[in-house]
View 1 (cartoon, one colour):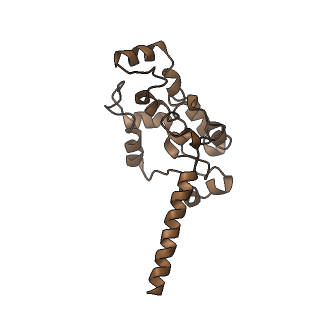
View 2 (spheres, helix red, strand yellow):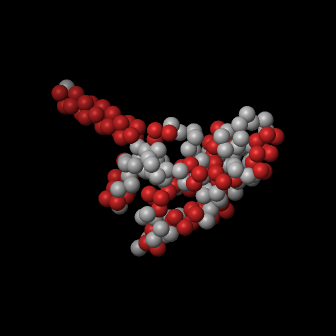
Length: 182
């Protein structure tokens, strides 16, 4: 019985620690992530993102076309302020501002942490070099393309007012950014 209580207490402490750590995880922004993810060794992941439509996602909301679109859809606010738009073009205004570190900028669109989760707890090089440690610190790791596609479709779906057919394999080919195997 004593062993059971000890194990149960340890399990409860572990769960509480995990939730506490997740609650403290903050968004650091692409400048922080990009420092380590721009080299050949890392597959030039920052370059891939910078050349993608994800990097331009917020900027599209600042165009005259987006203003017309928002008005035609009866949105009460401009596209740059409408939760219906910001939800997928950035998450900066749909997340509590206290969760952003100084370097985070919503105008960078759909960025690293949009898909990989807030990085303050896993940004450390020692943590990032260990896949299990980085996942335990909050890095969202997808086990396969099925999980990746499911996540992508949380924005690329028919609920989007500007939805266009989403061809996952084609689109994933444009944004895929694996670390090259050595």
